[in-house]
Length: 219
Image 1 (cartoon, rainbow, N blue to C red):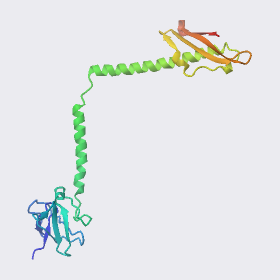
Image 2: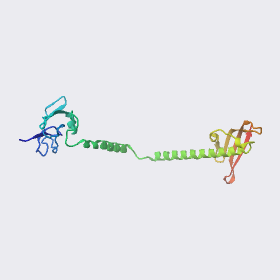
Image 3: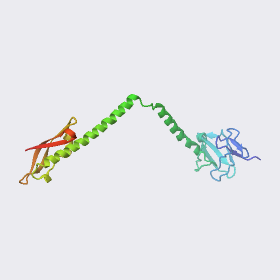
Image 4: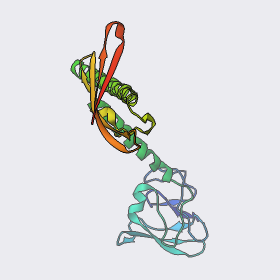
């Protein structure tokens, strides 16, 4: 008597001696009993109810059901728990995320047009503008330091001088040869009292690239 089993791919009945499933031609991989592991499982493809396929074990008599839709993906879990198959076909679906990623890359490359000449010029201009702003800010900081030193030189107690935070932001640059800073300083006078004095400082570039800094204080 020929012992029968069930194809794990299409749930068709087949002989345990068959080299492949006569219906789907899947290689000999049988549905196994979730209790004893025997491949002697009987079941009929047409025998299903409410989306479930029913089987029984010819070795131990165990009956169980598997969702019929699970055969589409070659993966099914018995209601009793555990994987009732002798081989794990879940690895087949690992290629799906890879294929999706490849598709996304191809689509993105298709819409990623090469940079035009106008776009390149605009990009270079933005980079040059950012570099010019950086150099200008560094120059403002330098002028503020020059002016604060020039103001300290005129104070009675230069070590007590306190200038506003971010004083350099008030520096006005006029061309390549002139910069001005109008601000104030808090410092002790000759009597030890803290007073606030305004000042106007001018930095001018002369011959040979030498800068001259002059500051005048006002009460």
